[in-house]
Amino acid sequence: MGGLPDTRPPHQGPHGGEADVLADLMDALSEGLAVFDENATLLRFNAAFRKMNPVIADILSEGLSWDILLREWVVRQGLPAETVERLSFMEARLAEGDWMVTPLEVEQGGSAYELTLRQTAAGGLVLVQTDITERRLMEENERAADQLVRKVLESCPANIIMSRVGDGEIIYRTPAATELLGTARQTHAHFASRDERADFITALLPEGRVDDMAITGIRADGARFPSMVSARLIHYRGEDVLVSTTVDISKEVELRRRLADQREQIFQAEKMSALGELLAGVAHELNNPLSVVVGHALMLRDETTDPETLRRVEKISEAAERCTKIVKSFLAMARQQPARLVPIDLAETAELALDALAHSAEGIRAEVLTDMPIGLPKVRGDAHQLAQVIINLVTNADQAIRESGSGGRIELSLRHDAGADAMVLTVADDGPGIPDKLRNRIFDPLFTTKPVGSGTGIGLALCHRIVTAHAGRIRVAPDRGAGATLIVELPTTQDQVSGIVDTARLVTRETRGRILVIDDEADVSDLIREILARDGFEVEVANSGESGLERAEASDFAVILSDLNMPGLDGRGFYERLLRSRPALARRVGFVTGDTMSPQARGFLDGVNRPFLEKPISPAELRKLVHSMLQEDAEKP
Image 1 (cartoon, rainbow, N blue to C red):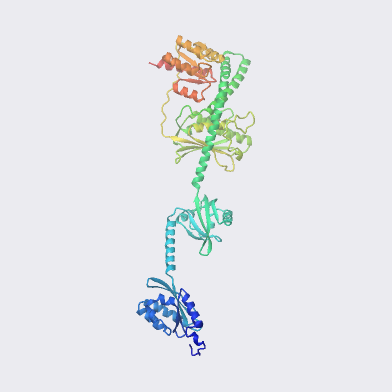
Image 2 (spheres, rainbow, N blue to C red; image 1 turned 90 degrees about the horizontal axis):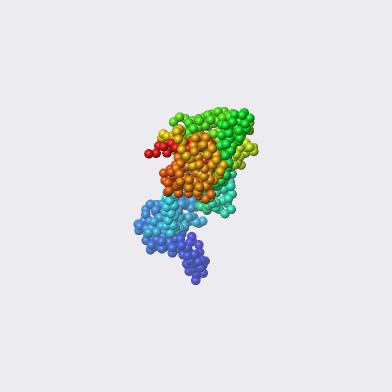
């Protein structure tokens, strides 16, 4: 080599000693090696190089020139000519001073190889041949897997984003994420506030994961929305990458709000039901003595002419009437359903309610502005009860303005919500508003913020009961900074208003006939007897159901008025037994009772379809009931 004297010991031979060690090391390598000197002459090669190139294995020997090797590779079809030209070009570059050139990948004998040329310190070159068949197969598998994952992600409805942790730069996003969150380059744009993203990163870093963290996101159109974010921290291509998914929970939030509203409505309904049972009992106990007070006061007023006596009677009458109104308010609040539902014009009802308020004793001090378009759909309801709702809402607003000294305007508007198929009545004022701590209590029965003696606490509870019975909803609008806004929603109806026939026409008859009154309260039965006797009727009184049944079976009566709740044989039992023994007479029975609220009483009255009068009674109402029953009997064939 190079003319240097051979100083190796004779027993080592040309391939002994260090040369043998070098040959063993080269043969131990999995890569194929072919070493050329500065003249591009083959010095040595290893077993792997021979094995990888079987077509030129027979010519491989020390002293083989680089050019001959390349030519034979092409001639023997070991390498294509293009590859050999590339190798020749790479060798020329090394000769010009490049220490390393780009590796070259080739297909050979069904295997894939990487050919690399490197320059040695002595000016020669080394051809390194590496079998990359398995690596290429792995890469192909990885590419196929990547393509599969990408295809799945492209079709996935989930909002998945890959981003760098530090600057939030987005590496990849699914189409669903683009649709929801837009095309921002950084994830910072997906958070409504920097604090939320900082909290998100802080929660992520300790364990590399976050599950269902509530944040306020920003949609592609810039709108904010409630969302839940889950994320994992992974290592991808040498760096920490964040994989996150965002779930839009707007519908869930809205559903939870509706469920909360429904629970509140159910809770209110349960409270009202329990209160209704209490009020029914209280009203029943008060009805009988109130009937006596009211009835006798009204009759005394008709009889006396003394001014002082009249003044005292008026005071008694006013107090009794006030008690009567309170009891009837209790009953109305406790009633499960409105008495009669017909298609009504809510705007017309509101106008009548405002007119009634304007001409009342106290009137309305605040300015009332209305916005009620013409031709709105009708609702199915009781005009009197819905007018009471409007009166209560406007009165409460007016009193709040009056007592606080702030504001002076009430706005009443009506609109049609076509989506919900409902009429929306809004009563808004610019008064002191409703404190947050009271917003959930204003519909509670008997709850009031007014001074003692100024309010009963049943106004808004009554509104809630009436609106609920009309299959509607009443609520307080969110705080708008000043005043209070209450919203009533009632379903619309396509039914037409049918003509109402007056069945309470009064008739005057020469012979008014006999009337049987059955009531276990002697004072009540005596009051009814006295009122009807003054109207020209012959009245008999029975103070028990058994006594009344004996009289009814033994004689004939034009009208029979019976109480429902009595010891022993009550009004139900009396009617059922009379219906079996004298069905024609049973059709002349009416009921005067203070128990119209219990399910049993309501079920019985609705089932028999007989006229009835609620206590406490007034002489005018009693006369109207009797005359209507006489008219009904006279019109029967």
